[in-house]
Image 1: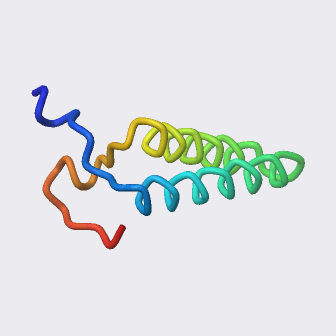
Image 2 (image 1 turned 180 degrees about the horizontal axis):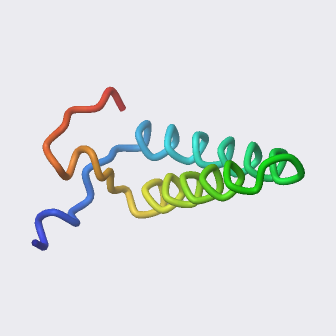
Length: 69
């Protein structure tokens, strides 16, 4: 199980996930006035992307799926 949590992202991947996370958080805040359910999903995905960026770990790569970054 410890191999599953090993770092598997380089700088480009971490940067890409950080940008995606920030954009999802901003989108969630903007949508909050209109659709609460969509807001919660966007904020949750944004926080998870930020976690991946900070940790240097990607869930898809840990499961064996190749990603571009």
